[in-house]
Length: 200
Image 1 (cartoon, rainbow, N blue to C red):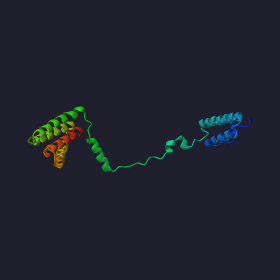
Image 2: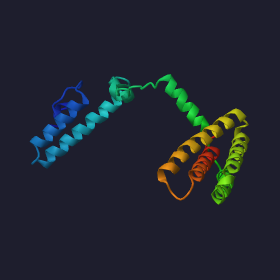
Image 3: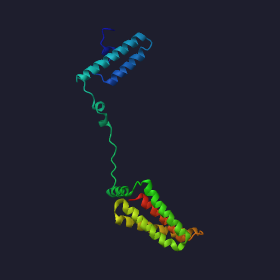
Image 4: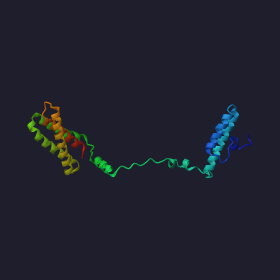
């Protein structure tokens, strides 16, 4: 048995693949499972073959398959999903419009809008004045962030119109003891606060 080369002991040729060598080793160990000495010889032969393969590989005499050398090339690349250009522009615009405010940028407008809400709840006659001050507050805080007065006017007008329309309908639908003008003013102040704090 000692006259045989490690390849012959495993029952493989010198050009056998790594998988064939492993399969031969497993098969030999399974056949001689009861003979501990023979199993040790098979393990030694297997180690010798691996060392010989490593030496040949380092000398450049064994070509390594591309899939082993460069496994990333064998992996299929994930399909590229291309979003429509208009969706990309809309997303970029929206991300550019969102602000991450500081605590002061949230609390100062909130305090002003709470005071204006209280003023409109005290007397309905004060509601138009409170709304005018609310719009002015929104314009001031929005324009202070980016110095874009046109955008500040647009956001403020949209907030006031949406707040009055939806708040008026909500007040009429609820039919509560509060006048619908007060509910509309409160919703408008809330929208103005959201726009003022979280948009730029």
